[in-house]
Image (tube, rainbow, N blue to C red; front, top):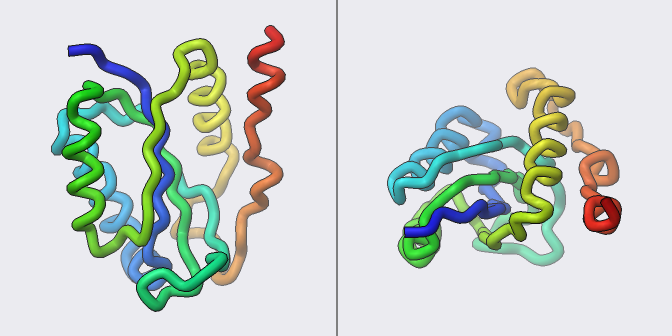
Amino acid sequence: MTEYIYEGLFILNSNRYARDPESVAGNLQALIEKQEGTIVVSRLWEERRLAYPINGQRKGTYWLMYFKMDGERIAALNQQANREDDLLRHLIIRIDPRIADALISHAQQSVAQSPAPAKKAEGAVASPAAEDVSVAAVEAE
């Protein structure tokens, strides 16, 4: 069994997240751990208006995770994620080992710099430009 590093971007139901952020985020963590994955970084990215309604929702809360998992378990993870009521959409990609450290360190720094989700002012939206990762700069090193 070979363990790879994956990036997961999850679009959460904003209404459910606003009511109980710890539970919804905990469900994501449990989803990964149920498939014997190890979470490296898990953080709120931002809340934004969706390009089109999904399940009647016009806003989504984006959650970013980096985790280690056996590649054979990704299909089961996708199936479980499709059954979650809190998730509107998700995307999981395998990270190239050459840039994994840079992406993870950037996500960890963003977690340290951002305020806790419970203390975030209502209606405030994080700036996506502050959290972009320049892959070209990493490859140039």
